[in-house]
Length: 216
Image 1 (cartoon, rainbow, N blue to C red):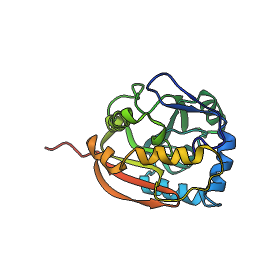
Image 2: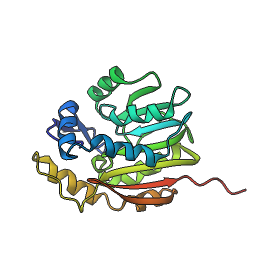
Image 3: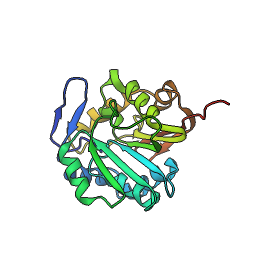
C-alpha cells in the first residue's frame, strides 16, 4: 500500500508524490492484505500474462516486490525494469533485485528513457493514485507508447468500494485518490489500448488490456 506509514513529500510540480520509508510500508501492506499479499500479487503477475523471454516494465516499483515476481516469470531470457520516483526505493530494489531486473528513478508520465514499443508487458500496482489527476491520462499514454503492438498492460489500484482498515492517517486519503483516478478501463482505452478484462482482487481493482496490432 504505497503511502502507508511512510514519509511522503511532493516531488517537482506536476510529478506527483515521492514516497519513502518503503520497508515499513511493505509491512503495513502485508497487514492490510491480511496475509494475502503474496497471493494477490501472484494474481497480478498471472493477469499480466508475463512469460519467459518477455521484456517487462513495472511502473511504481517501490522496493521491487512485484518486479522480483515478474522477473521470475520472465526468466533469464527476459528482463524487468522497475521505475519509481523514490531514489531510496530504487537503491534498495537494486540491492535486492535478481540479475534480470534493473531499476531507474522515473515517473509514469515521463518514460522518455525508453523507446517506442520497447516492452512486451507494462504492469503497475498501487501507483496510479499517486500520479497527479491532471496527468494520469498522460501516464497511460506513455505506458501505451512504450508497449509494443500486441503487448499487454495490467494496472491494479485500490478498489474504492472496498473498506481499507485505517492503519494510518493516509489510508483514507490513498483510497480517495484511487477513487478520483476514475475508471482504470477508461484511462486505458483513452490511450489506445483495447481493454480485454476488468475485475477485482482483494482490496484492488484492475484492468488488463492490449495494444492493438497495426492494421494491414
